[in-house]
Image 1 (tube, rainbow, N blue to C red):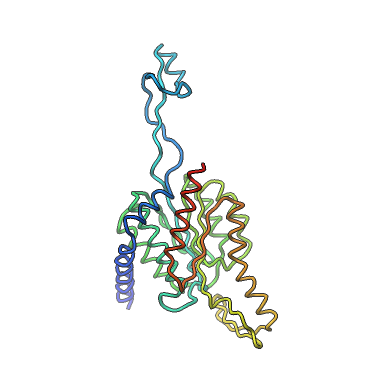
Image 2: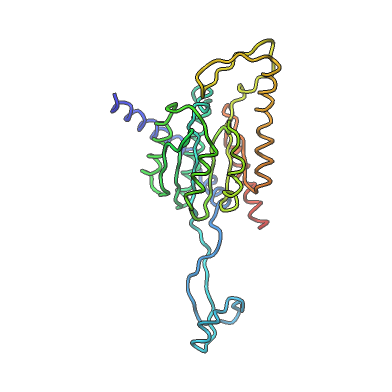
Length: 294
């Protein structure tokens, strides 16, 4: 039975690879490369001063030793570490088939990580629920990608709760060099906001919220039965309470957008019943504009 399940997971991973590689056009890969690039300069060598060199780059120590002016040469650090923090809790099971939050999150993570590999960069991965359920150090290879997709399917519905705060604390404790961090979640949690501040100071953080419109119904004719995917039980709540709960759901995009603006992060919200490509293109376009201004 275990062998059959493993084979099924491998088949799902390979089927997703075929689907996403069709989506990964040259244009999309180029847009990603322009939107996410290595930052900073890396020292390369010291050479004798040449006419036209910036005098601010003169290495005075070498110049003093050789009595000949020398300058430091730097090259742009192109390689960029990327990390995906993937919400694998039960609330991600909302929806059916291609319109399930989990499936959309898997496709978004899979497509973006293919862009990373196409850019010859490394990417790492962590899946979380109320704990860290999987962690893989950054690498770049097709087998690494297939292994990550396999993991995303494997952890389906194995655990219930969400603890985004603990997941962010774990990531901050890794002491990684500056990276792009994608947090892919429905963000149905609380008390995690303060953990984003130190992470955003060190890294380029992108929040990707996946949601299903059926999570926020408009009409409440009477008491409403709500099935809690993380506690596996029904709760009956009054129309007033239901309206309050779902208004909080609807306000989540505004709150996450405002938080991202204040912490200089990027944020997109993806309706799982719609094509997610416009949201990704909007993200790439916004990041390119930001890079031009810096």
